[in-house]
Image (cartoon, rainbow over the protein chains, first blue to last red):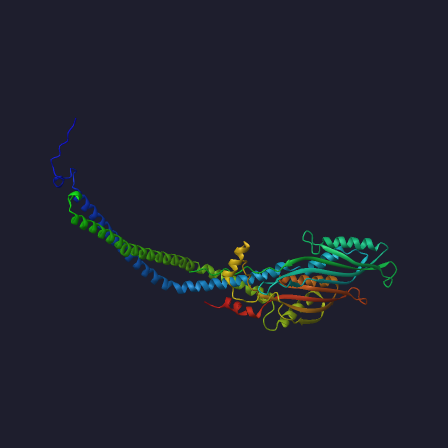
Length: 220
Length: 231
């Protein structure tokens, strides 16, 4: 049996470690206060540094700003110039050269055929947009009407061959993939064995594109 | 100091001191340290923004020479393509007539008449009705539809300028005329070619042409002038 006899009163007891509780507490509190003071001093220091850097940079910006504004204006003009050029390119792209069309038609006309009237149209049209706020989408569309006559007994074969050849002109980018015979009839006024015909041809819509929007002059 | 040996009054004082110390610490952080940290953060952000602005500005200024060279090149291209290839703002018919007669003479077709086709600017060349754009509303609608709002296309700068040309010539000469006209200028278009056979002279046809060029719209002249302004 073990007996422990404690003769010291509570007030007489002392901490047995290397430092007293009071000392440990005081040191901790002091360290915390010191840390807070140092932190605050550091914050003051970097705030002061940042403020002086801002002043320097603002002064540099004041010197640079007119130059940057001039560059911004220059960019705007440059973008406008490019937009004008782009739109001219769009006009050039959508054009169907008339001399090429005339050359192709001449090549495929059979010897026994004569044109009375040839009408080619390739103007710009557009459908009205559904609302006024929407932009219209203009396009060119090749259209052709041929009135002519053929000589010989088998006029229908000549016209059919011509129709096929017309459909194919400009291949692979055909001018008028849609060709139709409107009428074919004997033409006694022109002479015996003559037939008159009318042909309509139509190409696909070729949109006149918008110039790319000018790049917005970016900040600075 | 021992809690058990303290009297009640001493304990109360101690608890009060600890509470006061805690309040002081919280107050110090909330009223002193945290606002200071926010202020420092804001200052640093402002400094960084200024640094970025300066870097970008510096890069822009350094690229200024290249930009000037590019603009000069574009001005030259515009000069070449606009002055030589599109009707001027004043007296366009005179300009167009000169072009037509020059090519007619060179290719041997006889021009009978050149007349201007007058008309308003076609509706498709006019800018759409200008309404103040309600970006928020558009974004809301587009989000509801599940697609971003469509960018508004830029206004058109050119509208067609057309003339009617009556001439007489053979098919081959007409081809040569068209080739001469079109190979000189990539934007000119013969939008109507009407060839009618003449019984009296089978080799010479009556030809009606509509020749069309893009022409800078009056509303776009200030923009064009601004491109040529000196800095």
